[in-house]
Length: 236
Image (cartoon, rainbow, N blue to C red; front, side, top):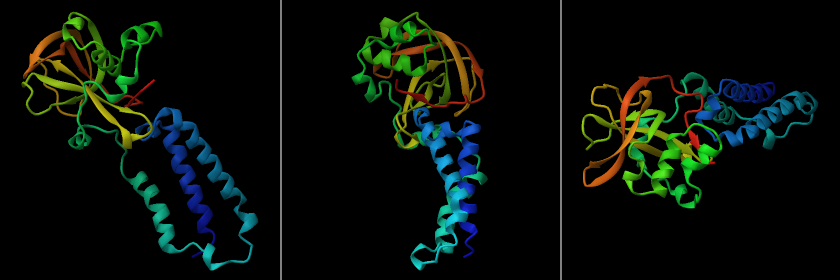
């Protein structure tokens, strides 16, 4: 194999990661806390590529020779990444996951989520409400409270036709450990398909769903939106 292919492969990997960074697509894969590591990887790949001309004249050794098979294995993920449009996790990923009303991480959080968000002067997210439900298991405690949330529609089997889950994925490290969370939404006069990203405004009510009483967001408005730049939520 031509030795010039090695730096080209390294450069291709660097450009691929750089593209994902500047387009924000990197957030489809990892927690935002680790983005700096991706920038570090881009820099390292570029440095190795630029320094390659100093080392390629060294005596060749079969143990260090890049084979066509190895080159194909290295380039395959990059080619797949370029050719297949990236998408954040959606309802297709829920077939192997359970949508949690109270994620496991809620058990380790002591401060009430809503009060904490208010003190930080930021808008409440789907995760804030789900954590709050875990801290206060009585659905009646949230009756009448207003919410303005975004997420994607998940129509779970067994729910009434006018009720669906407003869902998001919560990421700790990367999409491999993503946890699905959701809030029940009742919207009698709205037709929205699975995987549609929507903004929902309404008020919570304590309603009987099956054999349980749960907080349900009675929707006043449901507006389809584009997926957010950061489709996942993160534990703070």
